[in-house]
Amino acid sequence: MGKFVFARAATVPNAPSDPIQERHARVIDWYERKTDFLLDKYGGRGRVHYHTGLAPPDLVAARDLDGLRAQLWESQEAMLDRAARAWDAPRTLGGELLDVGCGLGGGPIYWAQRTGARVTGVTPVAAHAPIIERLAREAGVGDRVRVLVADAHAVPAPARAFDAAVATGASNYFDRARWFSHLAHLLRPGGHVCIEDTFWVSPELVAPFNDYWISNVGHEREYLDAARAAGLRLVGREDVTRDAAGFWRLSVAWSEALLAAEPDARKRDERRRSIAWQSQVHDAYLDGGFLNLLLQFELPPSPATRTPAAASPSRAPHPRRGSRDRSARRAR
Image (cartoon, rainbow, N blue to C red; front, side, top):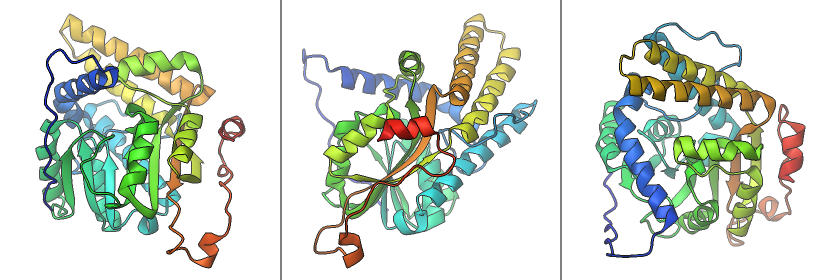
Protein backbone atom coordinates (compact mmCIF):
# COMPACT_ATOMS: atom_id res chain seq x y z
CA MET A 1 0.00 0.00 0.00
CA GLY A 2 1.35 3.42 -0.86
CA LYS A 3 1.44 6.54 1.21
CA PHE A 4 -0.91 9.46 0.74
CA VAL A 5 0.95 12.42 -0.71
CA PHE A 6 0.48 15.67 1.12
CA ALA A 7 2.22 19.01 1.47
CA ARG A 8 3.64 20.25 4.71
CA ALA A 9 2.38 23.62 5.86
CA ALA A 10 4.83 26.42 5.27
CA THR A 11 6.29 28.24 8.24
CA VAL A 12 5.12 31.85 8.38
CA PRO A 13 7.71 34.27 9.79
CA ASN A 14 6.55 36.13 12.90
CA ALA A 15 3.28 34.20 12.93
CA PRO A 16 1.30 34.31 16.21
CA SER A 17 2.18 31.55 18.62
CA ASP A 18 -0.28 28.62 18.64
CA PRO A 19 -0.13 26.68 21.94
CA ILE A 20 -1.50 23.53 20.29
CA GLN A 21 1.13 23.62 17.56
CA GLU A 22 3.85 24.38 20.10
CA ARG A 23 2.88 21.30 22.12
CA HIS A 24 2.67 19.29 18.89
CA ALA A 25 6.26 20.25 18.06
CA ARG A 26 7.41 19.35 21.58
CA VAL A 27 5.73 15.93 21.33
CA ILE A 28 7.49 15.21 18.03
CA ASP A 29 10.86 16.21 19.46
CA TRP A 30 10.27 14.12 22.61
CA TYR A 31 9.36 10.98 20.65
CA GLU A 32 12.25 11.40 18.25
CA ARG A 33 14.63 11.49 21.21
CA LYS A 34 12.86 8.56 22.92
CA THR A 35 12.80 6.24 19.89
CA ASP A 36 15.79 4.07 20.86
CA PHE A 37 14.55 3.88 24.47
CA LEU A 38 11.09 2.75 23.32
CA LEU A 39 12.49 0.13 20.99
CA ASP A 40 14.66 -1.23 23.78
CA LYS A 41 11.90 -1.28 26.39
CA TYR A 42 9.00 -2.52 24.26
CA GLY A 43 10.65 -4.11 21.21
CA GLY A 44 12.11 -7.47 20.29
CA ARG A 45 8.92 -9.38 19.48
CA GLY A 46 7.86 -8.03 16.11
CA ARG A 47 5.02 -5.76 17.25
CA VAL A 48 6.27 -2.73 19.21
CA HIS A 49 3.58 -1.17 21.39
CA TYR A 50 3.57 2.05 23.39
CA HIS A 51 0.42 1.99 25.50
CA THR A 52 -0.82 0.65 28.81
CA GLY A 53 -1.08 -3.11 29.24
CA LEU A 54 -3.11 -5.47 31.38
CA ALA A 55 -1.41 -6.95 34.44
CA PRO A 56 -2.85 -7.61 37.92
CA PRO A 57 -1.88 -5.10 40.62
CA ASP A 58 -0.10 -7.79 42.66
CA LEU A 59 2.01 -9.02 39.72
CA VAL A 60 5.56 -9.99 40.70
CA ALA A 61 7.92 -8.21 38.31
CA ALA A 62 10.89 -10.00 36.78
CA ARG A 63 14.31 -9.04 38.10
CA ASP A 64 16.12 -8.69 34.80
CA LEU A 65 15.49 -6.47 31.77
CA ASP A 66 14.80 -9.36 29.40
CA GLY A 67 12.16 -10.75 31.75
CA LEU A 68 10.60 -7.31 32.27
CA ARG A 69 10.57 -6.64 28.54
CA ALA A 70 8.67 -9.89 27.99
CA GLN A 71 6.17 -9.07 30.76
CA LEU A 72 5.57 -5.57 29.39
CA TRP A 73 4.98 -6.86 25.86
CA GLU A 74 2.66 -9.63 27.04
CA SER A 75 0.64 -7.12 29.07
CA GLN A 76 0.26 -4.81 26.07
CA GLU A 77 -0.79 -7.68 23.84
CA ALA A 78 -3.32 -8.66 26.52
CA MET A 79 -4.76 -5.13 26.39
CA LEU A 80 -5.25 -5.36 22.63
CA ASP A 81 -6.81 -8.83 22.99
CA ARG A 82 -9.23 -7.45 25.60
CA ALA A 83 -10.02 -4.46 23.40
CA ALA A 84 -10.58 -6.68 20.37
CA ARG A 85 -13.20 -8.65 22.32
CA ALA A 86 -14.84 -5.55 23.78
CA TRP A 87 -15.05 -3.84 20.40
CA ASP A 88 -16.02 -6.98 18.45
CA ALA A 89 -13.03 -6.25 16.23
CA PRO A 90 -13.68 -8.81 13.48
CA ARG A 91 -16.98 -7.03 12.81
CA THR A 92 -16.10 -3.39 13.53
CA LEU A 93 -12.38 -2.97 12.76
CA GLY A 94 -12.06 -4.51 9.31
CA GLY A 95 -11.96 -2.88 5.89
CA GLU A 96 -10.17 0.46 5.80
CA LEU A 97 -8.99 1.17 9.36
CA LEU A 98 -7.39 4.38 10.62
CA ASP A 99 -5.01 3.98 13.59
CA VAL A 100 -4.43 7.48 14.96
CA GLY A 101 -1.28 8.01 17.00
CA CYS A 102 0.07 4.59 16.05
CA GLY A 103 3.39 4.83 17.91
CA LEU A 104 5.92 2.42 16.46
CA GLY A 105 3.33 0.42 14.57
CA GLY A 106 2.33 -2.30 17.03
CA GLY A 107 -1.36 -1.49 16.68
CA PRO A 108 -1.54 -1.34 12.88
CA ILE A 109 0.34 -4.65 12.60
CA TYR A 110 -1.88 -6.27 15.25
CA TRP A 111 -5.14 -5.18 13.58
CA ALA A 112 -3.93 -6.11 10.09
CA GLN A 113 -3.07 -9.59 11.35
CA ARG A 114 -6.13 -10.07 13.53
CA THR A 115 -8.92 -8.65 11.35
CA GLY A 116 -7.33 -8.53 7.90
CA ALA A 117 -7.91 -4.77 7.79
CA ARG A 118 -6.03 -2.42 5.52
CA VAL A 119 -4.59 -0.12 8.17
CA THR A 120 -3.45 3.46 7.78
CA GLY A 121 -1.28 4.37 10.76
CA VAL A 122 -0.94 8.06 11.56
CA THR A 123 2.11 9.37 13.39
CA PRO A 124 3.44 12.93 13.70
CA VAL A 125 7.01 11.62 13.97
CA ALA A 126 8.61 11.31 10.51
CA ALA A 127 11.50 9.23 11.87
CA HIS A 128 9.06 6.52 12.94
CA ALA A 129 7.56 5.93 9.48
CA PRO A 130 10.39 3.77 8.07
CA ILE A 131 10.56 1.78 11.31
CA ILE A 132 6.83 0.99 11.13
CA GLU A 133 7.07 0.07 7.46
CA ARG A 134 10.02 -2.27 8.13
CA LEU A 135 8.29 -3.96 11.05
CA ALA A 136 5.11 -4.40 9.00
CA ARG A 137 7.07 -6.06 6.19
CA GLU A 138 8.83 -8.36 8.64
CA ALA A 139 5.44 -9.31 10.11
CA GLY A 140 4.11 -10.20 6.67
CA VAL A 141 1.57 -7.36 6.45
CA GLY A 142 3.58 -4.77 4.57
CA ASP A 143 0.92 -4.73 1.87
CA ARG A 144 -1.84 -3.97 4.40
CA VAL A 145 -0.14 -1.31 6.54
CA ARG A 146 0.68 2.16 5.29
CA VAL A 147 1.98 5.12 7.25
CA LEU A 148 0.98 8.77 7.16
CA VAL A 149 3.13 11.40 8.83
CA ALA A 150 0.39 13.84 9.74
CA ASP A 151 -1.49 15.73 12.44
CA ALA A 152 -4.29 13.65 13.97
CA HIS A 153 -6.64 16.61 13.62
CA ALA A 154 -5.98 17.00 9.89
CA VAL A 155 -5.40 13.57 8.34
CA PRO A 156 -4.95 14.17 4.59
CA ALA A 157 -7.54 11.71 3.33
CA PRO A 158 -10.84 12.05 1.45
CA ALA A 159 -14.18 12.22 3.20
CA ARG A 160 -15.68 8.81 4.06
CA ALA A 161 -12.33 7.13 3.41
CA PHE A 162 -12.40 4.81 6.45
CA ASP A 163 -14.67 2.16 7.90
CA ALA A 164 -13.37 2.65 11.46
CA ALA A 165 -10.77 4.45 13.56
CA VAL A 166 -8.84 3.35 16.61
CA ALA A 167 -6.60 5.18 19.07
CA THR A 168 -4.67 3.18 21.65
CA GLY A 169 -3.09 5.30 24.37
CA ALA A 170 -2.95 8.28 21.99
CA SER A 171 -6.16 10.30 22.32
CA ASN A 172 -4.84 11.95 25.49
CA TYR A 173 -2.70 14.09 23.17
CA PHE A 174 -5.58 15.39 21.07
CA ASP A 175 -8.02 18.26 21.15
CA ARG A 176 -11.05 16.00 21.49
CA ALA A 177 -13.60 18.36 19.90
CA ARG A 178 -11.45 18.89 16.79
CA TRP A 179 -10.48 15.23 16.61
CA PHE A 180 -13.99 13.79 16.83
CA SER A 181 -15.24 16.35 14.31
CA HIS A 182 -12.48 15.32 11.89
CA LEU A 183 -13.20 11.62 12.41
CA ALA A 184 -16.88 12.19 11.64
CA HIS A 185 -15.71 13.62 8.30
CA LEU A 186 -13.37 10.69 7.57
CA LEU A 187 -15.67 7.81 8.60
CA ARG A 188 -18.30 6.11 6.51
CA PRO A 189 -21.80 5.95 8.06
CA GLY A 190 -21.97 3.10 10.52
CA GLY A 191 -18.24 3.37 11.24
CA HIS A 192 -16.79 2.99 14.73
CA VAL A 193 -14.27 4.96 16.79
CA CYS A 194 -12.54 2.76 19.39
CA ILE A 195 -10.42 4.27 22.15
CA GLU A 196 -8.17 2.84 24.86
CA ASP A 197 -6.75 5.47 27.18
CA THR A 198 -6.29 6.95 30.63
CA PHE A 199 -8.90 9.45 31.86
CA TRP A 200 -8.57 11.75 34.85
CA VAL A 201 -10.93 11.66 37.79
CA SER A 202 -8.89 13.60 40.38
CA PRO A 203 -8.13 17.12 39.03
CA GLU A 204 -4.82 17.38 40.89
CA LEU A 205 -3.39 14.62 38.67
CA VAL A 206 -3.97 16.50 35.40
CA ALA A 207 -0.97 18.85 35.54
CA PRO A 208 1.67 16.24 36.45
CA PHE A 209 0.30 13.83 33.82
CA ASN A 210 0.47 16.50 31.12
CA ASP A 211 3.88 17.70 32.25
CA TYR A 212 5.41 14.22 32.20
CA TRP A 213 4.04 13.15 28.80
CA ILE A 214 3.57 16.61 27.19
CA SER A 215 -0.04 15.55 26.98
CA ASN A 216 -3.64 16.77 27.22
CA VAL A 217 -5.32 14.12 29.36
CA GLY A 218 -9.10 14.31 29.39
CA HIS A 219 -12.11 13.46 31.52
CA GLU A 220 -14.55 10.84 30.26
CA ARG A 221 -17.32 13.44 30.14
CA GLU A 222 -15.27 15.55 27.73
CA TYR A 223 -15.02 12.62 25.30
CA LEU A 224 -18.72 11.89 25.48
CA ASP A 225 -19.65 15.54 24.88
CA ALA A 226 -17.18 15.95 21.99
CA ALA A 227 -18.34 12.74 20.34
CA ARG A 228 -22.00 13.69 20.67
CA ALA A 229 -21.34 17.14 19.19
CA ALA A 230 -19.70 15.44 16.19
CA GLY A 231 -22.69 13.15 15.68
CA LEU A 232 -21.28 9.96 17.23
CA ARG A 233 -22.98 7.90 19.90
CA LEU A 234 -21.49 5.78 22.67
CA VAL A 235 -22.11 2.08 22.05
CA GLY A 236 -19.55 0.45 24.35
CA ARG A 237 -17.70 1.14 27.59
CA GLU A 238 -15.47 -1.18 29.61
CA ASP A 239 -13.47 -0.19 32.68
CA VAL A 240 -10.13 -2.04 32.78
CA THR A 241 -8.45 0.21 35.33
CA ARG A 242 -7.78 -2.32 38.06
CA ASP A 243 -6.68 -4.95 35.57
CA ALA A 244 -4.16 -2.47 34.12
CA ALA A 245 -2.63 -1.25 37.39
CA GLY A 246 0.08 -3.92 37.35
CA PHE A 247 1.45 -2.52 34.09
CA TRP A 248 2.73 0.45 36.06
CA ARG A 249 4.47 -1.86 38.52
CA LEU A 250 6.33 -3.34 35.56
CA SER A 251 7.22 0.09 34.24
CA VAL A 252 8.52 1.14 37.66
CA ALA A 253 10.57 -2.06 37.88
CA TRP A 254 12.09 -1.27 34.47
CA SER A 255 13.10 2.22 35.61
CA GLU A 256 14.52 0.83 38.85
CA ALA A 257 16.64 -1.66 36.93
CA LEU A 258 17.99 1.14 34.71
CA LEU A 259 18.66 3.32 37.74
CA ALA A 260 20.71 0.62 39.41
CA ALA A 261 23.02 0.46 36.38
CA GLU A 262 23.14 4.18 35.52
CA PRO A 263 26.43 6.01 36.24
CA ASP A 264 25.36 9.43 34.92
CA ALA A 265 24.00 11.71 37.67
CA ARG A 266 21.58 13.59 35.40
CA LYS A 267 20.10 10.40 34.00
CA ARG A 268 19.81 8.98 37.51
CA ASP A 269 17.67 11.98 38.43
CA GLU A 270 15.49 11.33 35.38
CA ARG A 271 15.06 7.70 36.42
CA ARG A 272 14.04 8.73 39.93
CA ARG A 273 11.47 11.14 38.51
CA SER A 274 10.06 8.36 36.32
CA ILE A 275 9.86 5.99 39.27
CA ALA A 276 8.08 8.55 41.44
CA TRP A 277 5.51 9.50 38.82
CA GLN A 278 4.78 6.00 37.55
CA SER A 279 4.35 4.84 41.15
CA GLN A 280 1.82 7.64 41.60
CA VAL A 281 -0.03 6.55 38.44
CA HIS A 282 -0.13 2.97 39.75
CA ASP A 283 -1.65 4.16 43.02
CA ALA A 284 -4.14 6.39 41.20
CA TYR A 285 -5.30 3.41 39.13
CA LEU A 286 -6.13 1.65 42.40
CA ASP A 287 -7.64 4.54 44.39
CA GLY A 288 -9.82 6.04 41.65
CA GLY A 289 -7.68 9.00 40.62
CA PHE A 290 -7.44 7.72 37.04
CA LEU A 291 -9.61 5.46 34.90
CA ASN A 292 -8.36 3.26 32.08
CA LEU A 293 -11.29 2.75 29.73
CA LEU A 294 -12.16 1.04 26.47
CA LEU A 295 -14.68 3.30 24.74
CA GLN A 296 -16.52 2.64 21.50
CA PHE A 297 -18.50 5.16 19.48
CA GLU A 298 -20.52 4.77 16.29
CA LEU A 299 -21.30 7.20 13.51
CA PRO A 300 -24.95 6.26 12.91
CA PRO A 301 -25.74 4.63 9.57
CA SER A 302 -27.34 6.88 6.99
CA PRO A 303 -31.11 6.42 6.59
CA ALA A 304 -30.61 4.76 3.20
CA THR A 305 -28.38 2.03 4.67
CA ARG A 306 -30.19 1.36 7.94
CA THR A 307 -31.93 -1.91 8.51
CA PRO A 308 -35.27 -1.76 10.36
CA ALA A 309 -33.49 -2.86 13.56
CA ALA A 310 -30.76 -0.27 13.13
CA ALA A 311 -33.35 2.45 12.58
CA SER A 312 -35.03 1.85 15.92
CA PRO A 313 -34.08 4.09 18.84
CA SER A 314 -31.17 2.89 20.92
CA ARG A 315 -29.76 3.76 24.28
CA ALA A 316 -26.15 4.10 25.33
CA PRO A 317 -25.08 0.91 27.08
CA HIS A 318 -24.73 0.55 30.79
CA PRO A 319 -21.12 0.10 31.94
CA ARG A 320 -20.06 -3.52 31.70
CA ARG A 321 -19.87 -5.68 34.77
CA GLY A 322 -16.79 -4.72 36.73
CA SER A 323 -17.00 -1.02 35.89
CA ARG A 324 -16.85 1.35 38.83
CA ASP A 325 -20.21 2.67 39.88
CA ARG A 326 -19.01 6.20 40.55
CA SER A 327 -17.35 6.48 37.14
CA ALA A 328 -20.56 5.27 35.55
CA ARG A 329 -22.49 7.97 37.36
CA ARG A 330 -20.09 10.61 36.07
CA ALA A 331 -20.53 9.41 32.50
CA ARG A 332 -24.26 9.96 32.51
